[in-house]
Length: 569
Image 1 (tube, rainbow, N blue to C red):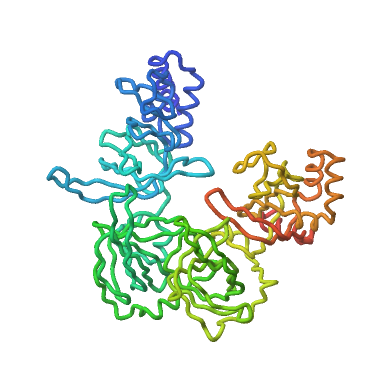
Image 2: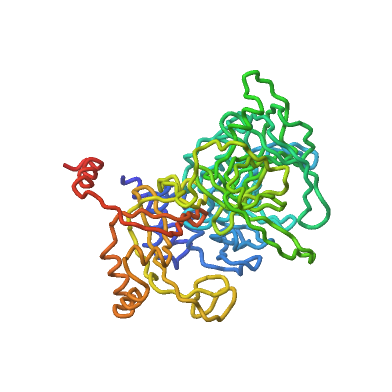
């Protein structure tokens, strides 16, 4: 222990000798943070602590945000930032803390010589909640301590911009400091994994799958300089299916069993996709026990509960419940027609849009359909299945499930399952109220878009005469996950057993603060069952509630269960 204390004091004195303006207690606290949080001894943390307390000495390079300082012995100013959005296209000598999400090595010929480099993706805001920005990076070291799942501080990186897209260059001279070791299982990208595992992965993978669909496509380059011929499709094994896009010639037909080596997983909106580029090797694979295309196609059907934003080339069986025709003028002035409706299956309900004429009268509905190679987009948190042509629709004579009552078709889903899945509508779940927000009560909405007004103004339509509405905002918890609730006017009044006039009168008499406090006194700790639609994105989970009921709990049974769970006598 004395040796550790001596090393600490020696390190503190060294920092103070180089930076007399630094506060001794603050320097000590910083060394303690590296020692206790990251297990980095004072001698190894010296350079990082010096960087932290070095006074600013130069303006920021590149014109972006962040702080700059000169490293001892280095006249080139560093630019320290917290978010990738603070970086400009010309920024160099960058210092930033990030999480490495993928890291792959390859041999590349540079100026006639073969060189090992690495590339992958990283994301900022590694310690915080909320939005995280993800960039590609190229590691010219390559540095041995850059592994997926690790949180690191990169010192001496630079920005690269190509065709409007920015990425990070980690140079040979860059320094990598491990702030949190990775606990992620590292998989050799040359070892094939199942498609189920590939759907959860990022970066480079190898898989074996049978081609379920393929189609030629043309993509316009972002800079408008021309087009690219690509092939899009879907492959499957007995664990699942995944879409692919090939940027190289792809000559294999539907039904062919293939091995894809070193393909790259990219995410389109919320959906993973296998990218086949010039470093990907695609070869015919032979396995007599591998399922045939027809069996895989049947097992790869998705249900409504499994839909994700950006899904493409999917097959599903649904019950078309309603259908209306909408006409509008396109950008070229021509009248266009889109059919909009609602579809159901035993796992839920969602919207559908057809850019073709679906000739089903109101008397024929509901009708059971098989939808092939359709795509999914989210609209206000609701999956919308897009049908592009009639060839994607097959009418089925029989429904593969028992009759569904659309009026009462609500699916009970555990809160954990909702948190792990994508956005859904027509669900109900339970949880305990753990928070009542201060902004519960009467609000005013824009008459055009229904956004909540701030200072009598809509963010889109400016100053407007708002429509009065009622809204409660709560948070529920089930012991594992939490979800925000936004409770509609009708659901609020029914739950509180009030009419709107009485609600507004109580709010006026008590005042906002007392009204919210009474809500907390009456409801914190109560278990409720809520129904509505769930929106799940990178900001967290939120349920738009159209029905809420208090769940009666047996207090003695609950106490016994709690004592058993926590081992309390």
